[in-house]
Length: 235
Ligand SMILES: [Zn+2]
Ligand SMILES: [Zn+2]
Image (cartoon, rainbow, N blue to C red; front, side, top):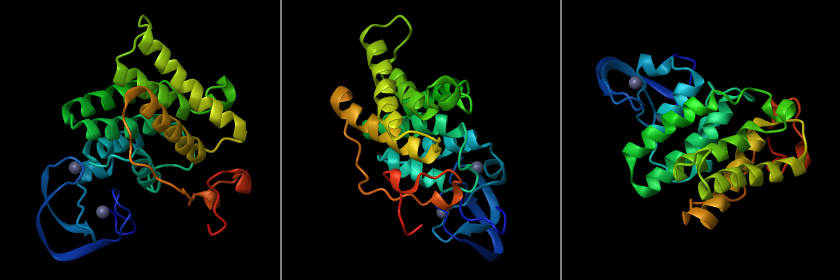
């Protein structure tokens, strides 16, 4: 961990001990000698520290015990490794939904397996999909989530319907706000659409996050400000 950075997991400040001691990496579970943890006790090994954005999202979502996908996504988006905009959000959306879903179901083996497949699928959803293909990648991410939890394929019937309906619902809500794109707004709204959908079609209720206030406005040159449902004057 670098001296200037904050904790990759919780964004808390880092603290430095005088002596090395055995520590367990909060992301991979391996043991190493180190002097650095965050004030909340997280230690991240060097291997995990230098992961790509998508591999970092995967590790965090596999390890997370949260059952609230919005809380998980907002924590990840605050991470300094995650750009303001970019296709890593296309993987983040199904990753946090799958993690929360399998945490609620207490099926940790399935959680890891499905998150890996989501990552393979999401890399095909390139940056700029929203404006160039008329298909926001965060919305596609909700379709990937439903496809994976229902085991949909191009040949399935009801599962095919649910997967496409999910993406349609997300896109419908995003489209009405209009552009320019904001990967924070579309990620939050897509997860909200998926949470409603999960109650309706999967019988799963994720813990909610009410009154979401965006902390990213000052980083976004194209922020819609008051037009955005998450804009907060205080940021
Ligand atoms: Zn921490
Ligand atoms: Zn590690």
